[in-house]
Amino acid sequence: MSAATMSMTQPRSVPGLERVTVALLLCFVASLQISIAAADILLTATLLCWVAVMVQEKTRPSAPRFFVPLVAYAGITLLISAFSIDPRTSVIDDKQLVLFIIVPAVYHIARGERAGVVVDVIVTFGAASAAYGIIQYGLLHYDNLGRRPEGAMSHYMTYSGLLMLVICAAAARLIFGRRGRTWPALVMPALIVALALTLGRSAWIGASVAAALLFALKDFRLTALLPVLIAVVFAIAPDTVTSRVMSIFDVQDPTNQDRLAMLEIGARIVHDRPLTGVGPNMVPRVYAQYRPDYAINAVNPHLHNVPLQIAAERGLPALAIWIWLVASLARALVRLFRERSSTALGPGLSTALGPGPEIRVSAAVGLAALAAMLSAGLFEYNFGDSEFLMLFLVLVTLPFAAARGEPGSPRRTPAPWDGGDGASTARA
Image (cartoon, rainbow, N blue to C red):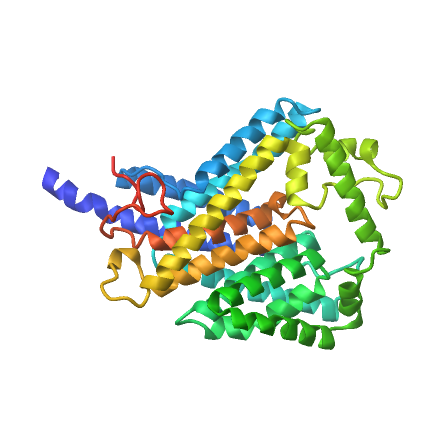
């Protein structure tokens, strides 16, 4: 075989492998709402194929700029684990940091219009998961605080958190999409009903804040609709849901008292170990030592508050880096959303940037997911839930992947949200 023939035939194997990689990514995001074991296997397969594609294309990985504080957060977590009250257990718990590799993988694989396909898959499987949760409530008697709808997940809190993120994706596409709005409109009632039936108050708050943000981004006057929608849901909801809503404002509610106790426990831990915390997964070990008399539970696995949990486990420097991550991500998403808002209908939009309106939808999804995570995270340690974290990282990375344009599109000038090599992966 001649050298000329080899140069013609070698690139043909890349698109086939790339199609397999894209298919595996779609299967991975679909499995996140079905099985964590399947998600882990499919993520591993996706990463292996992604590496193979980069080797064949002779490219190197790249990521959006918010990946820098994410890596710094991983680094300081590994460092402070050495100062944990049980370093071995903390280091084992640090394995969750491997999930951060989802960001560069999605950034490379879900380029251009593929990002919209990923969102559609997430919404579709979210709808199926919502239907299953409704069946659990109506037919299998998952209808009380002791037994709540959990879909295919192992815990109702994970299930409610995932539903919250799916609602963010569906609502953003419904509000900002210029095409493909019918399906989100059809499944939104099921998503809302399923989320309500989980009795997950933190996810309710997160979804409400995300909806308010999306309404405000579209037209601030639309925020007046949110109280009306909440009132309608409240009026038709079963007694278990309405009484759960009212418990939010009941200071005598046992779970509310326990949340206040956890705030005090976290503050005491941070006071004693401000620089390193007690170590990842060590809060249950010291819980009794700091527990006030009015606390309800003898022990809790975490402090039900993301910033407080990070500070207590990993110290104030780690919390500062996490805040840097949030600020960096929010700033980049806002700038991307605003740029697409101003250029989506303008003439001469470069085809390398992909369709402007669709990038705007992806940016709205990312902003809604970030707002939901932050607001719900004041009452639940969702950033430490592997299933939630994986879906969250996918959703907030998709806008940057969409802005890169289609694979093989011309290189463009680096934009504010890109990594150091712009939107395209650098060639070796």
